[in-house]
Length: 265
Image (cartoon, rainbow, N blue to C red; front, side, top):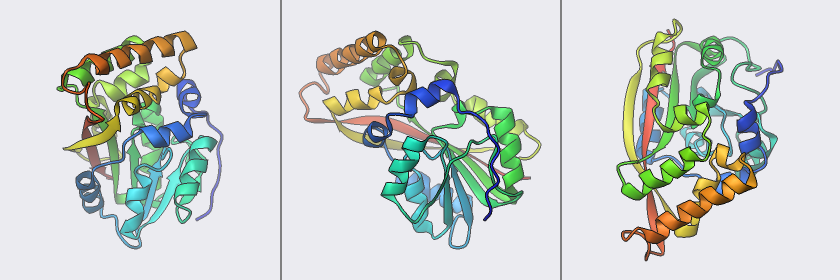
């Protein structure tokens, strides 16, 4: 597979929020539930011989779950710090530095593309045009998010603290509602109807681990020290006061993993 690079930039907040915190991101962020991965592999026909792109792969949280399928997995990640952690964790995965709006591959290069925890940072129109180019007709696209389960009271309170700390429009799109993403894909002439699935998921953390998880949120990392410290202090107060979790050594941070899949027309 030949690479042909075109220069485009990463969203400024994403670059600041993720660029220098790859190790903390790997430590603090959850993986993806086996049920969601199994559905993805089956629905997108990912198996031996398939060519799959994990786009905006980060440190490889989803990439590592795709590799055992036997597919050729290409992890595309624009931030060097993220790629370094990813490459160290799984050397057999091909790792490429590029952005979604300018992928350095030929037309129809991939049988499937997955975008986990990142589509809200992309330019929707430009990235979907590019994905329609690089996915072969009949191939698949899936957008995936580990969404915080706000039906749990303390999680909803933490989520509000994070939002009040100066959330960006991109963060709001990724953490409040992802219906816009399904609508964008369904409206694009290169893709067919969108099929949506939800899978319960959880991440076992110490109470300090909850703070670490919040601290890897992009706009918290990118905030001024004063804003960041105040937000994390407020989260500490929430977990220390909640009677259901305050006396536990570990707590289950609950998620609903949302998957939106479509076939290239």
